[in-house]
Length: 99
Ligand SMILES: [Zn+2]
View 1 (cartoon, protein in one colour):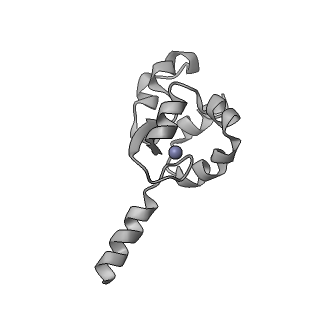
View 2 (tube, rainbow, N blue to C red):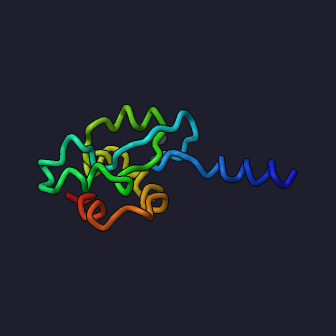
């Protein structure tokens, strides 16, 4: 029983970093790798685990290659959750969030 509870808890923590859904989770690059040149950073800064979050398929598809700024302009209600979920973002990625 305890095992089940723990399993349930750890599973329930795996939710979309944007909307909180647990449906069909995928890996999303917070800053799209395809846009690295616009940000004037090395590609490896973006092709890095600190730039990856869990996102549900719906958010991932809708976000596409939007920058975080464009994405949060569209869904301002997702930003607070995101900042709480993505504590491990590198400072380099954090600095790109507002650009
Ligand atoms: Zn989502």
